[in-house]
Length: 108
Length: 123
Image (cartoon, rainbow over all chains, first blue to last red; front, side, top):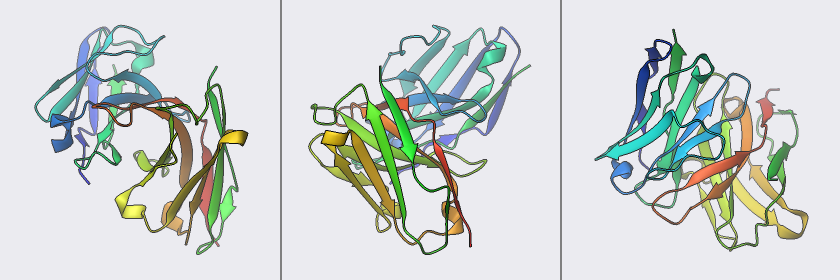
């Protein structure tokens, strides 16, 4: 199986832009999906595929992929965006799923 | 409205077998393309995908846990069951079930999650 690596923590000033990255070989073949998790809550899907955002997710969340790196960008971060974020994709075999190591986003 | 709910014991002893049930509504696991996954999260740690079962009863397991896991479905009851053998304290985690879409294309996603159930492994 393959791994997906994320930076452990990032911080962003209120209203500014933050990019969360996810690196892994399988991302050359499969798109990532992204999940927001607040303390004590189940994860919530915030972005997936090339350019899909679930209903109800603000358009300040966007995603992209380049080579082996997927990115989730929050443009104009809000206090409520402070959370852990996880990427997910398939592994190189295509048969299994793998989550990234997670990134804690702090909004200053 | 899609909902999922996990149920099972909150406490199991080491070496015992854990059985968790995911009861869902708002979709049918007999519909082509529908899948349900199990995912866990140890306290303070990252999410870990465990297993997936699809509408055609195909099953996939995390390679590192394959010998411990078994997943099955009862379409008539809208339930998916996860069995995990030889439980160890390191298996202490919140266990989630989640509807999984796009499992066989170039993208997949978990769009609906249960609230999770905390399972503690201790003697």
